[in-house]
Amino acid sequence: MEDPYKTLGVSKSASQDEIRKAYRKLAKALHPDANPGDKAAEEKFKQVSAAFNLLSDPDKRADYDTAARAGFGSQYQPGMGAGMGGAGMGGQRGPFNFRQTRTGGGRGFEDIFSDLFTDFGGGAGQQQQQQQRSKGEDVRQSLKLDFMQAAQGGKHRVVLPGGRSVDVAVPAGAAEGQVLRLRGQGHPSRVGGQPGDVLIEITVAEHKFFSRDGQDVRLDLPITLKEAALGAKVRVPTIDGMVDVRVPAGASSGGLLRLRGKGFAGSGGKRGDQIIRLMVALPERDEALQEFLQTWSPPSGYNPRKGLQS
Image (cartoon, rainbow, N blue to C red; front, side):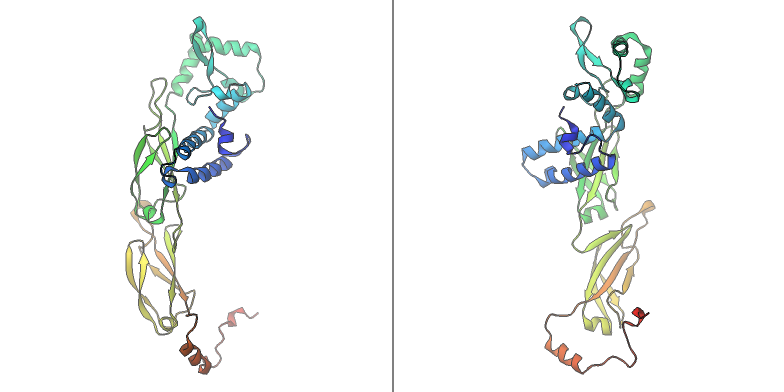
């Protein structure tokens, strides 16, 4: 296979966090939804997903690194442990095992020959290890949602590496970085065990005026000077649709209003709130307002910056 480190553009000493960030950046840019009809981008997306699937698993990464050091990196296939195709008995090709190098440095010929005899049926210990690792490979994939899709949940189709599609039930209130597991939807086992799982990582696009704060939704609401001074009932967007909100008389920019139960769904189905920050917005040119303010004075002793004095 291609060098997974080069595919993700990371060093061989990269941390799991660095690998994760590199994958997410590439997956967003190459996702089929962002590149409809682009076969080259789709193929690259599959390669990036396969590389992340390998390097994000410590055991698989260790197996690959061991095989690469022995010169068999290009022959490595996920699901074979660290096994590479090697000359076997009677001209057959079988797994060549490097697994013991994880805990040590270089190895002598006696260790290699010991592995060869074990791999070709000479030891019950190897069979036991195979049974312990009999589950098929997991498949890792990303799913990009817009803000409202994450808030409301629903079914979404995901194209896996290899072209297979699966339907994913996204719960209402899905969060950035959340991972959904589809059990038994991954690669089949090579030794008759259970299939692996599909792990879907959620990414959420930013909204043009909503933002998320835990389970709460935040919104900056522009209001006129008259609405702030005299109070008013105004229409406000929420993730459930438009609602009427009462702005109290004498409201100032930065004042907060709370709409209970209008946020994201959390554990147990309980929803957060929507927090509205009032922002007084003035027109660029309003001669009547300017003329009025020329003759207006604040109440005696009023100082809006009093709290800033030391």
